[in-house]
Image (cartoon, rainbow, N blue to C red; front, side, top):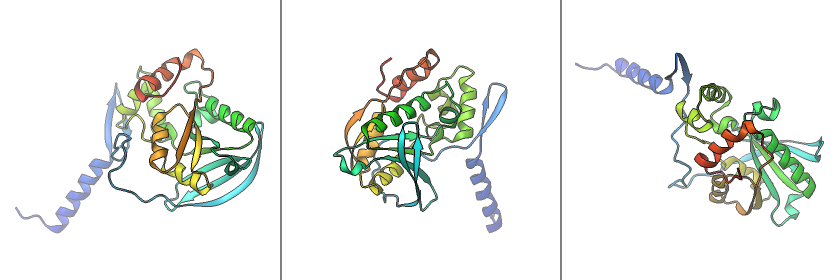
Length: 246
């Protein structure tokens, strides 16, 4: 049977729609999720890619209970944003202390006890404040890159017994789909190519190194944890490879 151009067009549209919208049944409740782009498992890309270009849109003074910082707003050509908190003059340090912090509404704002995000952020602010120079990069990578609503869906699955990694994967996402090219671009925009990284995540170190940022030291970022966090931290240690003492 001959296929008209109009029929072929609508067949392609139907295929595209089917790929864009997946339906995952969880228990008795259906959960609609939006799949992530293909993920390469955190491995270096085989083909070189262009480094993202950033422009600084704003800069202002930001007094905090951890001292005075400068807050800078960056954006790339795709309108992806990133905020930098800068203490003192990091460029005068051979390798200033840097924290790359992923946005967490539930933790950072609502003080959720499901994660240690707010405690890590405050630890970083205090540590950099004491050092007198350093940078905190605040990335819009909610839920390790899956977005706020999908993270809430993952919480729903965790309430049913899954851990943080299993929940993300059940929704069709990798355990961690964050990228750090934007952070690397922000560090270069700030004139920083050699840093000490405040992090427990060796994959973050490797990603920055691949992006041209020399990480001369990884500084642990592990605040005191309550009993409610033990399962969450164990999953990060055993399934994500985070360097934690439990």
